[in-house]
Image (cartoon, rainbow, N blue to C red; front, top):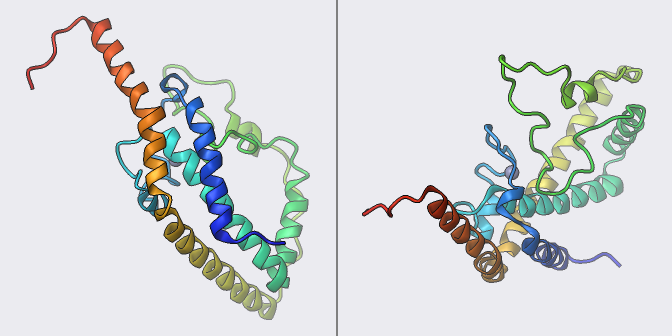
Length: 212
Ligand SMILES: [Zn+2]
């Protein structure tokens, strides 16, 4: 039996809360670019963690919610959108011919982040992960679609987008109901670590506390 969206979101929040104690400031990977998934994310706003929360913590939740929306859209597509479903299966089959995909199978906190550090002209790399991933020979392109088929496909893509938007909106509504336990988890596992980190830094620098 298909689980309701309420149950799916609640279970994803449960899983994120189980992961939360494993978060540690030292596991934070330095980034110089903003994360497109988290910046201005309505999911993070609904969860009440859009600001003052470490990015890896935000990203883990945003990614879990995105997975829920993706699955809902895939399910809707499979049941209602035959042309788009066939296109996606073809695309999957072609992608399967590319053996190395460095952006896949990462832990939630790294999913969607840039693969390589920003280039430094002083220290050129022999190769980057992104290049390794994209240098594979591309699979044969699919045969071109007729105008009629393109129009039908565009209609189905529009319906899939509408499904994604509606599911995302409902996920946000449901997340609002989980705000208290999300906040409790951060207060319990994240904030003490940040306080300890700042205290350590203050000790390390051996500097007097700023009067302001
Ligand atoms: Zn992010």
